[in-house]
Length: 385
Ligand SMILES: *Cc1c(COP(=O)(O)O)cnc(C)c1O
Image (cartoon, rainbow, N blue to C red; front, side):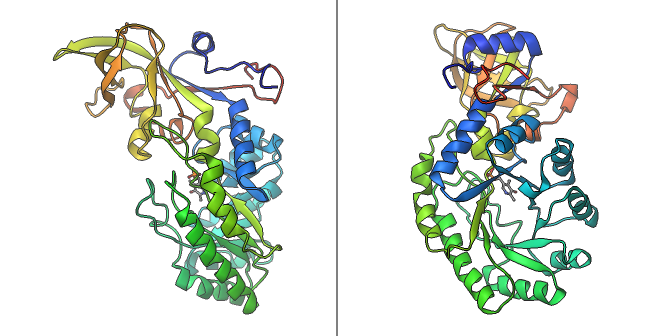
């Protein structure tokens, strides 16, 4: 299969796709989505992987994950709408936003989602009208000040409060299936995952002892790291301590994870075009049609540094890459070494699938990158669409 699929990240293919679909472009390679999914499956055997749509909510990623036998993690009514529109079986989906409006709960229920997340008493009470229909995961917080994005500051209850929350749910007749956590995105190592798993193992046992419900599910969230300009550990090695920690769970506990970045990040490249150039203080400045308000928004929100290169050979000169808007903050990279570029030249950013175009704006009326999905079906030779 791999031999037949085209590689849309090759320079000739990049040029062909830009000629056909315009610039800026985000080229999404479903063959790479598939490869990432399979690698994580192998690194976490027995763990059901729910792709978190947030980093790249695109139907081609969703379809690829479902075709691989995977599951989905939804967090908003918009994501519910996307997946419902694709007629995906709602039994494959969980809804994991800890704070929801009643309308968000109703939208997800109407589609058929049954598993939700709550992390505080008010949020548990919101499910009272739907008791009997829904199953909850209680999100526990494990702070990781070291993570690039510490997702346990904004969400999750203290481990010491988790059982009280479970008791409240039991009193209200709302079924709880287990616990979830998200230690933070792009984790440097798996120590936080391990700590969180060990605590949740104890919580699951304690809740069962108190007969608070089934407590047969553990959701270990996302956070699996990928390579940017900085290296990341191999996923098999990263997950080794997680596998060891999960081995302590009773067999009846189903373990799920919510990978987002790991699936989508390496599966797309961003392609931008030089709109114009200027020489300032002895350096070339190149102005692209994509920037910090567009696909490179992840440099601000997600603290990512994408490996960037030009699709042109030549002696390297110091250069600055800037975005298209009239705002001075809109600079992608200074102190770069690039060949001398001209208007029309292409700039490629690698590992740009996650938290890039998803958080882009159209500030100054510069349109967001078009997303083009290639190699949609395994082994079909790799056409577009
Ligand atoms: C963002 C998010 C994810 C995905 O996290 P990654 O670090 O990208 O894998 C998973 N679950 C929840 C609840 C999230 O908010």
